Length: 262
Length: 141
Image (cartoon, rainbow over the protein chains, first blue to last red):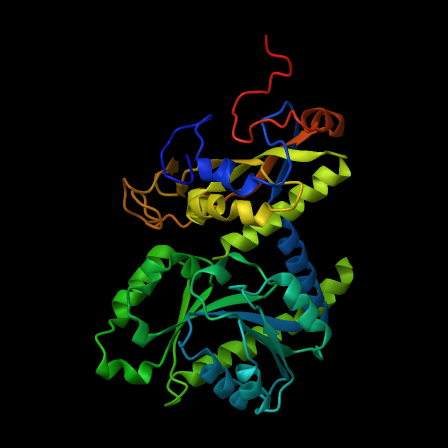
């Protein structure tokens, strides 16, 4: 299919703006010259996947459970994270990678809780990638039975496609965003193994239908787990913390296996 | 917006290959792209800027879009859902989370112009029309 106009014409159909506009003045002769076809058959994101694999091995070796938190901007990720860290830090070591286009405002909020935090600014980038995360890991203390939270750039579209080497991808949806979001932004819910509904203390003031939202999410991803929380009222937080502690313990136990295969 | 990251990853991968094979430039790039990626149009759109000043500049991007198919374990058959992200069997209505095709994002092959060939074509004064779909004829009658 032609990617510009959406027509299904194959072969010699050209759009001028591909083949002319940008080429003037560059001095190349861009005809369809006779050329050798070389088969590659590799994933386009192979490089990111290789970095992700490296991160995953490294985290497994260290016994660290990593969670990639994905959501739209304003879903309450950072507030949830601050509250989570306050509840967790007496039980487990926590480290954080913060991803934002600009500023270190979020990292400052997290650092105020006393846990080691690295801020990544992606500039024009709309998501974190595995290479950035690998570098951030270099400056974090990775202890056994600990949790690494990777707060992705607030964006319900792009982060879904990039593996960072995490153990779990968790998509946070605040109830103020509407119960139709899983249908409208399916990739974020298809790629996640858990959906956390946040700000549930606001439900009495909204038309958000929790049952309908879950139905939508399960239509996209029948296996997706679900938790409902409010960082503000504390509702559901104990269940979330228990889930994190169990997951971190499981990750800590994989140490032996990682060494056997190493 | 992540099409730019994907385009850049593609440019890097293709340029590495082209350089290691000593090519003068890349003439075409063939991709397999599953419909669930939904970025074919966006990729075409950002391709000129992602490939500018690289061996990929001017290369034709051919995207073979792969349709969505799922496995229905109840019917024990490959099915095509009624719509993207409607992961249900169109016949029995049961959930079909197992996606068989539609998520691919693969670089299949690249067409490389050998250095000697490009030198002949880029001779001053014989610069071919960049938009011409026909192979250039050096000495037309």
